[in-house]
Structure formats: structure tokens, C-alpha cells
Image (tube, rainbow, N blue to C red; front, side, top):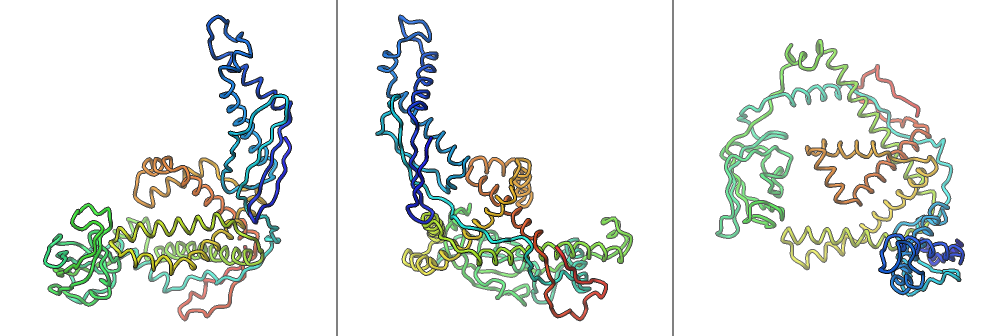
Length: 447
């Protein structure tokens, strides 16, 4: 096959394919032979029906099969030879064309492609990031978190504070109509949601609250709320505080150390320090990746496919519109919000796409791929993170193949980011040392 590729616009190409007559004849003959073997025509033995008879009965069908087969083979060859890097599946209209086994067959299609640009040298870069230093106060906070996680809720007579649990009786109303009531609803300060209801400014109002206090605020329920009188509506919500509870940290006693297979407080603190150090190292590495990637994106200039940018903006706008309608928002208000945020959204989409294409270049340079085992492991981890059985998450992804492709691309780009970081030198930024920093925890430099 011969290919002629024309650039129509940035990231838009026209491909003209010419298939030699010999290849066309071979495909047509092969298709007729296949049909002849599979059908039974009265008066003829299997596979012995004359060609003219097959042409009269199946000519149109065979023409379509041959054209489809040739188009698929041409597209695969284009990809294998890396002549184009498509972002979308091309639409090839060959219905009007006629296959003639004695002549070459020509067809053309247009396709949106990835930007074509040269990557600068991305290995051996230097990047400054804060040192991963663990202070004594970090360890203190880590130990306290462990104690709180294993602590108990006890009644509190003092005003509500951050992370306290407040027990409410609540009632949703609209005008004189009572929509719903609940008793003894538990609310953890900082969450913003009570029994699935988003309550405006609740945390700002209840800090310092005690049993017996009452608050009247505005709340709204999602469109899929199981309570029909609340679903998709905004309403007034009255909150009556019945009790305030506070977490009492677990004691650092023999039972605590036994549960964690530790000897004493000193070993506990060492264990906590190691965990915090690992987390800070990961955070440092992630920041290094972000800064390295930002620098690479800023160093290359290329046009983006307008079709993809426009489609991404339109998809987001439609999702936001549907969400706003479900929230009971006014149509004019929704339109104003979408219009006001469109320029900012477009900038964000373009930035994300530039990062995507740079990571694609690194992935190709390093020949990175994602195995089926890695893909399944990622899906199972999503299930664990969301408290759902892995089988449910796998089924969800199987029902939406596009999501699985997105996950595979994400995992590949994570590997590309890691390759970028490992090929760079991380240099400690000079930052003020906290007064309580551990003198033994020295800043680390290196890859």
C-alpha cells in the first residue's frame, strides 16, 4: 500500500491510501473463496458454485467486506509504521467507492493526531525541592493521631471544637412544610455533611456550641437522595444540639504496645518517625516530578488539537450543568456560572493536555507499558480505597471500557513521571529549620 499524508491544520492530517490492483484482486478472490466454502447452492457441490453466480448473489456484500478489510489493514499499517499518531478513530467513508479487481483502489480519510514536537533533553536535570526533614513535633503529632484513632468518644461539657462529634436532632422545612426529620444524627466537625445533607457554613456556626443550642441554616440534598421529599432540593434545616462528644486518646499502656507489637514509647516513636519519613520522601518526590514536568512543558511549544480541547470543555460544561439542575439552581444562574468559568476551564484543559503529551513522549522514549497484572492491581486498590469489593469495581470498569483505557494511560504516565524524577538530581532548597527539628535528621540530597 502507498500512503500520502497531508497536513491540513495543526494536529489534523489527511491520509490518502492507494492499494495496488494485485492486492485488491487477492482480497476479492479470497473473499469469494471463503463464501463459496460456507454456502450451499442447490445444484452445485460445496465450494463449486461458479464465480458469476456468486457475484450476482453476494457481490454487494463481498464488496463491503473487502473494503472494510482493506481499510482496517491500511490503518494498522499506518500505526505500525508510525506514520501518524491518531487521537481519535478516523471515519472512513468508502460506501460510494467500487472495488474493481483489475484496478488500484484509493480512499482517503482525515484524522486528529497528536502534536508533533521535539522533546528537549530531559535526563540529568536538576530540581530544587524542600528537604524531607522529620521534626519532633511531627512525631508528637503522629503518636497523637494513633492514640486518637484508637480512642473512645466521651461526653464533653465544653464548647464544640475541631474533630468533636456533635449529636443533632434535625428538621428540614420549606416555608410551613416539614420535609423530613431525624433524631440523634452524628456529625464529625469538619465534614460539612449531616446524613447526606450538605449544610452551608455548619462548621463556622457550631464551633463552641453546647447541648441545648439551636441553629437554623440552609441545606441541600443530592438528586439521588433516597428521601423523595429532599432529593435534589434546597431547604431550611434546623439543628438542635443534644450532645457533644470528644475523642479521648488511648493510653500508651502495655495493651497499646502489645496491639502494635512494640516494646515501649521509644520504639513507638521510631516506628512513627519511619512512617512520616516515608510519607515526606514521597511528597518530596512528587513535588520534584511536578516541578520537572512544569519546566519541560514550559520549554516546548506546540499547537493543541482544537477538536480535543473543545470537546473536553464541552463535556465538563455539560456535566456541571446537569449537576446544577439537580441542585435546583436557576437556569440563568447556571448559564452565568458556566460562561464565567469557561476561559479558566479552557486554560486548565490546555495545561493538562500539554502535560499529557510531554508524558507520552517520555513513555515512548522509555518504552513504558502497563501489564494486565498491574492494571488489575490498580483496580483492586481502587476498590480497597473506596470500601467496595474488587469484583464490583472490575465490573464497573468492564462496563465502561473508556475508563479502563484512562486508567491504563494514568498508570503509564505515573511511570513516566517516575522516570523523569529518577533521571534528575534533587537539590535541597534552603528553608528555615524549625526550632524543634531533630538534630539527627539530616537533609537528604540525591536522586
